[in-house]
Length: 520
Image 1 (spheres, helix red, strand yellow):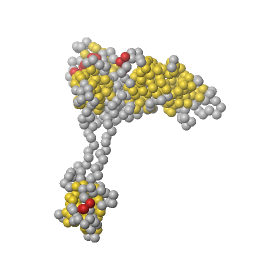
Image 2: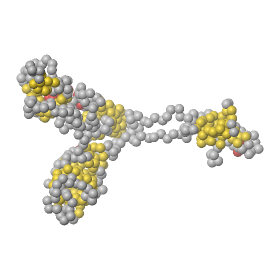
Image 3: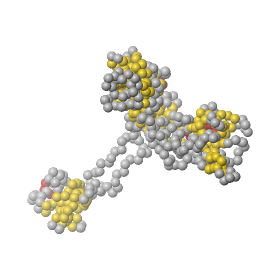
Image 4: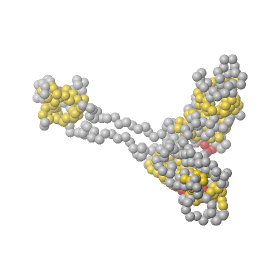
């Protein structure tokens, strides 16, 4: 920061550094003073917005009346506006994970300059596995037994004996010998569920105070974020199946009946999925009115195959030699231009190319066979000897691999698809993610929370989940598709997408999408 000196040489006030990137959080409003323009209105002041590009200008226009996070610097150039202005680098929805924690907020007049924020680790990360549910409510203890009090009903809890569920307050009327437990707490419990004589019961392995970050692992092992739970809601993971027109979630704890406001678009979706919504006791047991639906049908990239070295590859201490295999009495040797090499062959090693008349002990002259042998070497009686591990006739392919096998590149073309379908694969790149890359702190995962949307001319949209590195791969029917991205509200996304792509049956098409966020 810098100061404004007064006549006595002191400092009148401290003010932020003008060339530092800050964030302004406020509502975008339209103004007609000095010509039509946009401003961000905060509780303490207003700033003129000077976008650095047309994409930023369009994004600001789209968010008039909305609360946004503005990234930029204090404008110090010549301007027609007679008020303070921001040179806008980007604008975000306040809930967007692109908003970095290390960009400080520009202080209001008369307030001290805040320190540079530090990254905050996730709060209470809980992973939801298949067959489990996560439920949110008020944790209450009654006669030493815990339960969740939710607007949809009571959920009895059983906890492991050594589980400490936020022991921050005491039970209102503790039972005799009861340990210190919280009387009430807004929290989330995760575990296996079942129905018993007293209603819904949850064998919880984890109970955490709210807020928490609730995640699920997809079939590829990637962590997928789940929408925040509201009181009275549960989140469950299982296999989505359809009985006629009635959907249900098949879990290892039992079926959960589902109701969708508009089930038709979801009708083709089956398989591993996560649902979130209000729970209730239905005619056939546990039921949920779905508010959020997250299919986990992501094609996993094939696991990397570790090449198996051929038997002819040299191991430490081995050599390979080429010559004529022959016998002198019962001693085999290799006759080479450089001299004789003694060889020892295991008794069970077959040499099918040698006839019986050419083997040791026959009355016929010993035949010679051009071969290459691989094995440990040693010196016996002043002669080079090889304990044979591998041999084959010569000439032939070189037995020693001159170049070590290389792992397959991530961008290699996928295997040929089934008839009538084509592979679409590629990479989405979003950046820069901070004014100067590499970013000084860990950045949020901007890929796993998003998915490509493939819209055919006469079909339902296909959602292709992005991997943490932005790569993707999917098997789709041949045809023309319009490609867009979910949560495409950040700078540069709308200017880059949508795109058109044609998938040809029985072929693979590469699609690369580069989105410039404009952060400089």
